[in-house]
Amino acid sequence: MSPVSGREPLGPEALVASVLTDNPVIDGHNDLIWHARKHHGYDWDHFDVASDLSGTGVHTDLQRMRAGGVGAQFWSVYVPGRLSPEEILTATFEQIDAVHTLIRRYGDRMALATGTADVEAAWATGRIASLLGAEGGHQIGGSLAVLRSLQALGVRYLTLTHNDNVSWADSATDRPVLGGLSDFGREVVAEMNRIGVLVDLSHVSADVMRQALDVSTAPVIFSHSSARAVCPHPRNVPDDVLTGLTVNGGICMVTFVPWFVTPAVHEWDLAAQDAAWAVGIDSRDLAAYTPFAEQWAKTTPPPRSTVADVVAHLEHVRDVAGIEHVGLGGDYDGVEWLPEGLDDVSGYPRLLVALAERGWSRADLAALTCRNTLRVLSDAGCRSTGRTGA
Picture 1 (cartoon, rainbow, N blue to C red):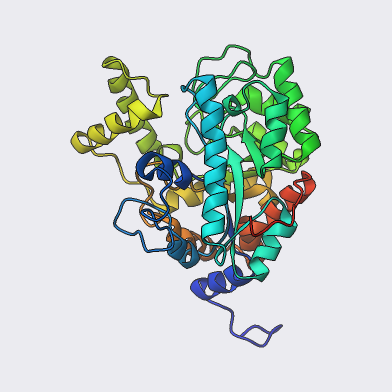
Picture 2 (tube, one colour):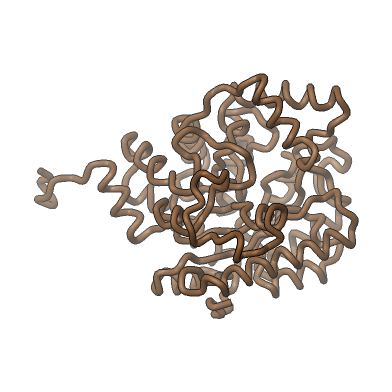
């Protein structure tokens, strides 16, 4: 028994259950909304996310979010960068509208959130706080006015690029053109700081990461990236950038994407990309590459990816940047498969138990699940509208 408390210390499972009661998971990135568009035409009658969708290939539904201790979700309002400019803007606003429609439909279980106060108000009424993030600078069409319009509709982060460069910033998975940010790219970052939209540095080149950290006067985020020292994928964050988060105040929300977390799977994915390019398929074009990779996996099965692989990234980010600068960004429904034990949104407690077994304290786990993200939302000036019913 503890000589201080006089009570038996909690085991890992009980500790995690206790932590999640007051510190639900805030996840940085989920692509369910694009799945709903692509496969169901936003028909929420047909695609009922309040039902248990286990076994359908979908990673996310409200029941499994509850089981996983998810209390807040950044829904990605992603659209592909290879659409025409007109299609990109139209699809972006349709994605945003789909989130608002979803929240209205399930208003007893979901609430719009645009800042820390909204998240906490949602929790006080037993609802899942729903935030919006736009996944790619192409979605503002080179216009600060469009950026401001997205903010007015509730978008609270913008990923500066997706898989391809934009005219003002280099992507991690494209050939560098600018060597970082252009002058207009710096204006975008400054305007995001001014209006309270988080600068999301997932998907950008390492040079953009470093330059954005120099420019930004507010904490930045990586909504779904892991540690490059653990797995050398260009989507991951180098150690010097992780160190920069300590000064900036931002967070790296570690993702579960197997080829970002498991070096052997990264090597497998590189081979798949080479095979795709050999038959004329651009691996950056997800619409073309994803079905190719699915077929590749059937003939060349990928190595295992596990909870332990994700733990290695979380501990590396904690050790380099500090416990105040780590979060979670699963990328559910953005990839076809996840590490064993993290197969869907119900898996967060398994990850937290693994961390508790390695000595993570209650305070450490609370920082990881939500406290760091709530601080960043506040420090970056992400204003709550109070319109939690959407």
